Length: 385
Image 1 (cartoon, helix red, strand yellow):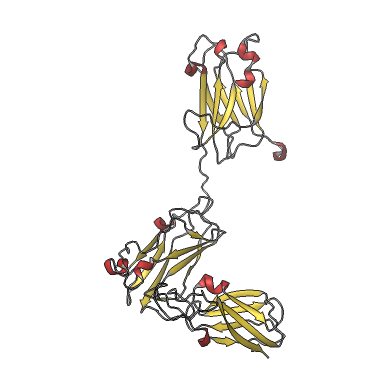
Image 2 (image 1 turned 90 degrees about the vertical axis):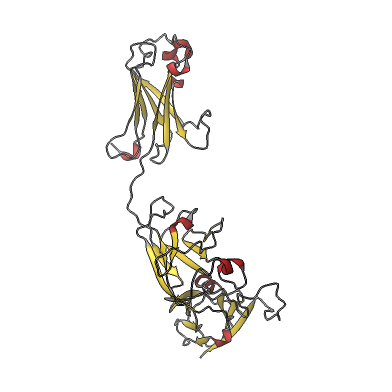
């Protein structure tokens, strides 16, 4: 059969003996290799043999197929499947306008007209059957591509992790699949800030996972009563379960764990003046390298640093974080020209502990402190020569 012209259909076969449905039965016929049924067969239904009966004249309205969905209450009619009916001998064939889906539950109903049977009981005039799709077992394909920060030594006041995936993921209940264990293999109690609105990127391929700031900032109750999520001098493991499902409903290819040592907290503000800038050679597309001297926030460092020419033109190119996010590499789309350039950095750039440029994460916004931030960005100049 030419698959291009093939249409799945629902067939109702009738072997009529009486004007009741007491012996009727509906079967869903699913050919070998097909992922959805092509026929519904009902047997032992009377009516079509009698051309003068109400049923024989009005058979088009007797067979219907519906989509079953949780959005409808039991006493409500679900949406019907669009299609057409044809009679051939003792069979009624329903052909859907669109092929049946292997991800949808369907309900077929066959009902005798009230005037065509001695019974006024609806349940004696109607039979039905439901087809429920079997979840196709596909091989897991999605995996965790990286856990950031990538360094093996992380500060006690680490603010967040990033999890990146090879394919879009499913949202909801993410914290059920993520665990933090101490060196005694004990799970840390409520280490993360469990936000109702999960922090996914638009592609659902990167999740931002905050450690509860109340377990980081000094003088805050969660830190004083429960203690820090991470403890200086100890070893921890971040574990992601493999039963976490991607956007297709398939679990991850494998579980993943990141082990790391915890070192003293970092409460120093970022200082771009201390960064080392390695300028590229002119007439090349060599990478500009900025060495931070510490690991910075993976996502923010990629987004909040831009390069401009001395004329103020934005230089297009690709960015990459290297050496455990301690280096920023920028490769231009066009060759470098001799001259002066500016690396413009947004002040909200963060290190692993959430410290900004000129401001420590520990500084409360309500404290009476001397303002050190007067603009949204700061510049570092360099020369290509």
